[in-house]
Image (cartoon, rainbow, N blue to C red; front, top):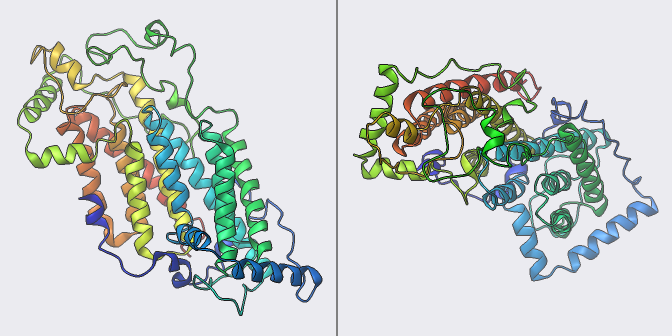
Length: 474
């Protein structure tokens, strides 16, 4: 439904995207997120043409090409089949799906990976055009020649940056395996005949250094929030919960503590703070408006059509999935696979969308724990509408107002609509559908969704404003 609406059956080989998109001589001057400038990390010059070092480098390339095996060719296909940023984001999506559900931690993880890859690419492109080294010639290639200079390798820079950040934000995953994957991805460019060994060695080192700088920005921030005192039990988090009837509490029968109650205080990228656009409170619990919203969820939930159920399930983003920000990342990857963007532009798009969603998560969680808005199951039961009522979807274990899913969707669709203006109307419609899906699922009331969608769009607009000034749209 969603991806089919966005991606109209592209053709050709996605791996040729960088070559088809043309050269990007200005990408090394684009504004970065963490690096003070693209040349903050030093990359030494390549070997002088005609030197013994250059000859040895070329000999290593020829040996790698001559020693291709079926396994090696499969590795080339794996790492060249999509924009170079895609396989690494797909790994992040998979790692999130293996964890306990925590959407705001997921959006932070996605953003750190995406920003690291983008900043590494910007730095690589600076040095590509600083040194101007041509790629290998007279070699049997498995992929098309790149349009930009060869040194350092952008593919390897992406692999180095992504592997370092993934190992940090997903410490349960073997770091050695991620290192090996980065080396395999880099090496595949040599065996494909696309890069000299020194190109990928320099790219890997550059990417790893950028990854470490991104982690320094994160400092000691724990991506999966421990909140030790709050996760010890109800006595911890109840101290944060204000007094008042009909405020959020765990779904009936649940003893889980709320997810990431301090996430609204996390550092942000474009927002001054998580409360910059904090929406006004939800309707008073003793108001007719609040009762009507609860009744709407009850009546819709009792009369769901097959189409509404499909929408609710598609957008659910529950345990065992990449979660709501992951659904939008899957959409971005589908778009990148069709649009034939250069590697710098693909990395930039992924970073812009994920920065927007990261800030959207922080802002949504600020509102959730500022207001402790009840979920429909709380309201419908407590108001006496239906004391035993159950929603179609499983109610998440954190407050309802505002909807995180709607906030993510508003932010992501706004940024994507700017990057892909011919699809803006479809993207906006899908964001509204994603927001409405939470009402169909019985886990959000209308004000949760409307306030979240508006909040996300404001954040997306800030990111678009920055994108217009980052140098890529001149």
